Image (cartoon, rainbow, N blue to C red; front, side):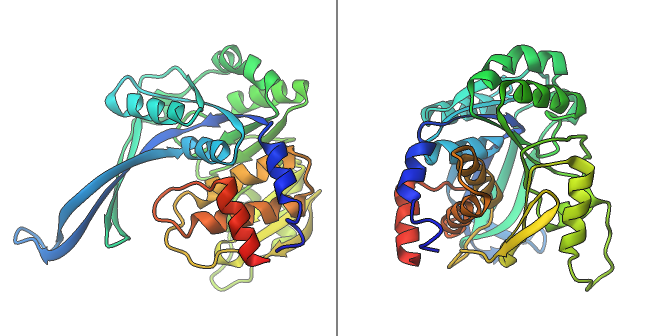
Length: 329
């Protein structure tokens, strides 16, 4: 990995000058940490003795945290309820230097609670409202975001299928970004289909790429990479496509053609929570800093390799990244 990222210090300096706008589903990630040494007499379930609780920003908030941790200037737009979780999430983001733009809506702040026992996730508890409660009209989006889109270097649409992003909003934001010459990327969740076209980057995982391509494979069928890339380019006309393949690495495609498949960089995996957010943030930063796609993918791969070695949703700093790449060289 040393050769592709030999210019890492210079790339990090360019990234520190970038301004990125994230638009998407904000959520608060709560972790309950404890141990289980006995079974409940009430039901055949473990009893958790709680040791501590921690909180971090999830969803689009985690993308923003990753951007800020890597040195970029970041603004995030998403729903923040008038509740304790919303206030906590806003304070958490602003404490990292991230500007927050609360979008209109009437729902509760999305909270995902994970119960962790001996570094393993036992269960997750979700609190959220219906997607319609988070919906922002295209006109509201333009009034809230037009100035920031014109002033930033890149826009990231971070979709967790919770309701913020919809066809009309994506079309309006895309038009504003195109008019300003601003890089625009989307991390799609095709279980709630969205119409989009002419973006600079999309980053589905393998399963999502098949859904976007309208393909359903029988069990044990090899992944048809070339056909998926061709179909996605024909349907969405995206400049770059990066398909995350989990332990198999990343598939890079431009113009509907496969450029290469890169193996994963992770040495030891403790938790994959949020690793996709890290990859997305790093890819956008590197590409916006004018790095070639392959270099950007190496950068993202290394960043994700650091994060999956941590427990819970996490970020990577420039110092950690430099140390990781030096170790791999």
